[in-house]
Image (cartoon, one colour):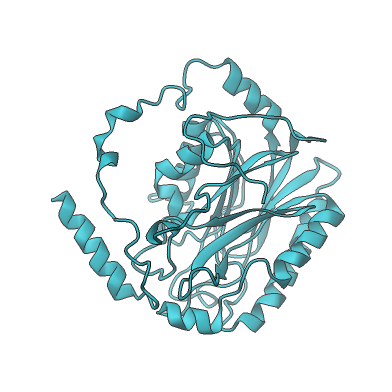
Length: 350
């Protein structure tokens, strides 16, 4: 996979890629499909998303070439079972799989990059573990695989790579592509500024959000966290944000309803395009100008937060709050264990 190694001080490497296209359109596609109960049902949902890719690329071709297509969290399957053991029995899939292969064929045909909706992933290297995973797929196949570092605890019983002793894959991979340096994080990850900061320090120019942000924290006041956070992470890191949010109605993904509001934001926090809030499938397309972003990063001295970062000023990061490796040997993670771990972390703050 073509992703960067860890890079503590690489503040936005813009090494050119061959045949680069630095001004293009990104399409944030939100879905509204019933959640599968069995892995055999995933194929129909993936096929529908491939149809949406074609709609976005071909439908908007007269205006600006669509080169990046992004889907939301849980687009393939949500963790509808209460334990990791049940998810492993019914819904997890390995990566690569037949669906990623089909996405690759389409990406090659259309010369496009696809950020998949999330899979519930199984990996024989980590028995008993469920990862919440999205892949960036281009004409040459899988370019990066991102596993959610901050599961939405207590409800999510998938594990974070942070939970596993000996995990040595890059936590925050950035793919260097002809359409810019692309980094992704999933849903709740975005409430941790450190995640997007590290992706940006690793060179990301376009920050991709694959999300399932439910009401009341969606795109409407008074608690429009979705909009506020997307804009803030863009301006904090001088980066474009392409954010796709789940838009399934309550009957499809109980007990939550999903407001969509997918959007494209520029490096100064300006919303360039946004789907109207509310459930239902939509495709929203907005411009991405990586050349302009590289210019801004190179000439700015003010409001260049990465260059102004005073790492040593924050002793909070010297202490462990939600400790690593605590679920390495746990074969069936449950909500009750998440609650106990959260309570222990809260006690450290009192």
